[in-house]
Length: 124
Image (cartoon, rainbow, N blue to C red; front, side, top):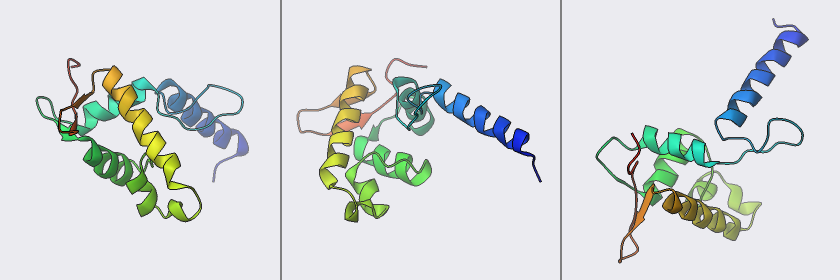
């Protein structure tokens, strides 16, 4: 059994760690989950072995949703049963923006046939 003070310290540790790692929008105040570049880079480094690539759709579904339980795309939203409560285009837009951010950071390559591949790029 933990005291209220002990629980508060655990909550503060989680919140501060999530904010530092790029999973929360701010350190204090009204907070919500987000994926900042530092969190995306960490997930790509964890998901994709050095010298390899992973299809973006598999990164979204197999890594982010199945492994990390993060709903970032339409397929994850469908599997989580969220499409009954939310418009699916919200998740399509999230997916597009995530791809744009990853591409700008050098973590995503888009080929002429619209294939999208995730890789750590020049990061090590």
